[in-house]
Length: 75
Image 1 (cartoon, helix red, strand yellow):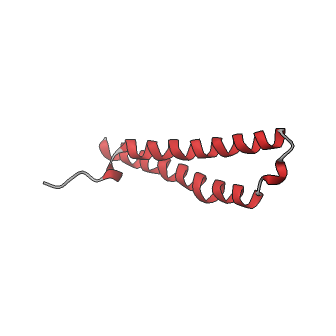
Image 2 (cartoon, helix red, strand yellow):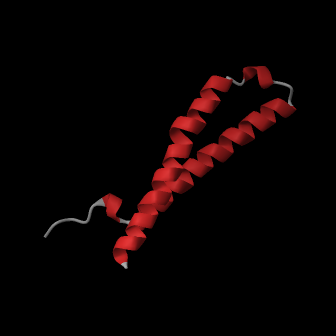
């Protein structure tokens, strides 16, 4: 009997979406707080944009596509 793969569960993709959204919201919150405290010079825009465009957005897209594929397969 073969074990069920982790990426064959919808909950895994939903968890991925949740983690990426939390990272995105935390980054936005930290940048907003630093900007409100007039400490915006401590924010490295290149790093912030890299995290958003290379971690969060692809993670959210993969999560959405994976969840759609799993739901279509189960029907």
